[in-house]
Amino acid sequence: SVGEAVPASQKSSWASFLKSIASFSGDLSSLTAPPFILSPISLTEFPAYWCERPELFSAIADAKTDEERSIAVLKWFISTLKGQYTSRNEKLGSEKKPLNPVLGELFYGYWPNDATNRGQTNLIVEQVSHHPPITAYYIENKDKGLSLQGHNAQKTSFSGGSIIVRQIGHAVLTVKLPSGSTDTFLITLPKLRIDGLWYGSPYIELTEMSYIQSSTGWLSSIEYKGKGYFSGKSHQFKALLTPPSSSYPKHTFEGLWHLTSKNVKSGEDFTDVTSPKEEVTVANVDEQGDWESRKLWKFVAKGIREGDFEAASREKSKIENEQRQRRRDELAAGTKWELKHFDHIDSDPIYEELGRLFKANPSEEDAYIYRHNGPQFPPVPVPPTES
Ligand code: HCR
View 1: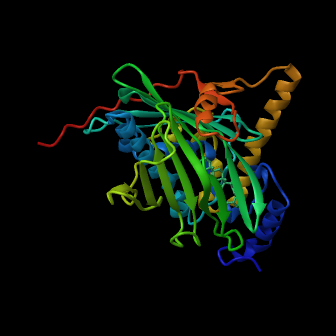
View 2: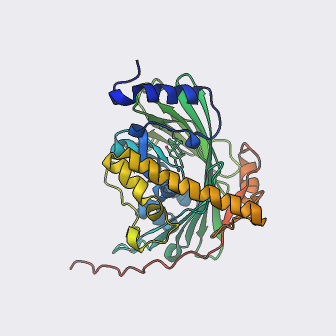
View 3: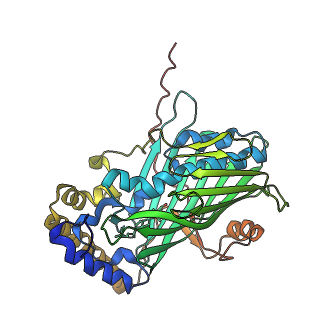
C-alpha cells in the first residue's frame, strides 16, 4: 500500500491522485489532491525566493569587472536554490501542492535597506494566466541599479514514479553600471524531478543544465545531479564559468546547492546558505487589497493550517466560482481581462540575442514586461550604526 507519510484516512485518495498524475500530462495544478499534501501558500509568493539573501543580490552591483560581476550573479543564483526548491520541506514537512493562483492575483513585498547600505529591494508579482498558470514578476533594487524581470510556467509529465517538471520562462537581470552602460544577464531555469511521491513525502531534485549568459560574453553553465551521481549526495551542482568567445572555462564551482560549495581550482569557499535567510516583508493581510494573495486566500489558508479542510474547500469553491462567473461575464460582454502591471510580448529580443550565444533551447520565448506602475513601498529608515 502507499507510503508511511500518508495519513491512514487519505491513503486511497493519495493512491488515486498518483494514478491520475501517472496518466496525465499538462497542468498539475488543476488536479484535486488529498488534504495532507495541500500548502496554504500560493504560487504567486514563489518569486520572493529570488531575493531572500538581499546582500548577495545587491553585491552584484558592487562588482568591479565583468568577470567579478558574472561570479557575483552565479553566487546569488546558486544561493537562491535552497529557498526555491527545499524550503517547503523545511517549513511544511515535505514539498506540497501550492494554491493555484487566480488570474490577476497579486503579491507585493520588499526587503528594507540596512546599515550595510544594501539598498531597498521591491517585489511585484502578478498572475498573468490561470490556465496554464503563468506568474510574472519584477524585482528591483533602485538604489543599486538592479532589476530582475521574469515569468514562470511549468510543463509536467510522469516518469519512473517521479513527476518531471520542465520550467517554461526565463529571467532577465539588468545591472546599470557606473559608466552608464548596462550588463544584462539571461537566466534559464533548471528541470525538476519530484521524487518520494509513493511515500507521500515529495521532495525536489534538480536535473540537467541551466545557464546564465551575460551580455559581456561571460557564460555560466550549471549542471545538476542528485543521489547516485558523482558523490552520491543529493542537490549537487557543478558550474563552469567561461570567458567571452572562449570554449574553455576559467572557473569551476562545485558543491551542494542547499549547503556549501567551493571554487574547485583555488579551494576557496563559494556559496554558503547554512545561515538563516530573510523573508520578504509584506503588508498585514487586513491592509491588503482584495487581489493580493494572502488576503484573497485568507480563509482557504486558515482552513488548511487549522486542518479544517471542509472550510478550506468551501472557501476555495467560492473563489473559483467567482472566477468562472467573471470569465462568463467577460465572454458575454466581449471584453478581456486586463493585466495590471505587465505587457505581454510574443518574442523577447533579449532572450533571442543572449540565448543565441549558448544555443538556448527553445530559441525563442515570450515575456511579460513590467509597466513600472507598482505600489509605493514604505521607505524604511536605515537603522543607526552601533558606535
Ligand atoms: C512544480 C510545483 C509548482 C512550481 C514550483 C516552481 C517551479 C515555481 C517557480 C519557483 O521559482 C520554483 C518552483 C519551485 C517548486 O518546487 C515548484 C513546485 C513543486 C510542486 C508544484 C506542483 C504543481 C505540485 C505537485 C503536487 C505534488 C507535490 C503532489
